[in-house]
Image (cartoon, rainbow, N blue to C red; front, side, top):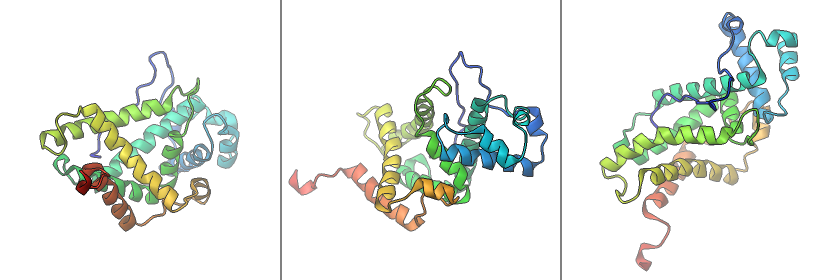
Length: 240
């Protein structure tokens, strides 16, 4: 959907920081990117609990103690990566999405195409974001899925509200319900492509290939089919 600033609000009692330490920020851009990509790969291939800082520091060829000069903890690193990837995605959307809420279904298609382009340009970023949505509730991360889903819905609601004003959607259905259906429809389309093309996400991550190695033409075709059903239902109109 149209790009918006995405900010994570951690639990009030949490003292986890989302930022890198000064030592990391003082590194060259090239070294920062190297660290980010190696960390993304580890978290993209593993759940938070099993992701190994030892593996990361080994690949970076640094002592484990040196890592804590860059990030306070594993949790800090994880949330830093999450914020970094989301901001990358939003920047990408700003460059590719032009449709207005009044052309809501065109906007949804543009968003899906934008996701595929981001996926191909930043495969590890996309893989990490995918893995975040598979995380279980834990003491270290809390309910990370709920946090991300809630923020995503908050981004969708203003667009849905504008679309309702433009008579795209029914006024007798509340904004919350429509927003959830819109949010889930995008996941449904991607899940369908996963099943149809038997996509092996883990293998693609290992090979640093896009998660969804599917043509934009196929994405648009599939999206149009699902959105047509979304608009008019699955029941044969002649049977009514």
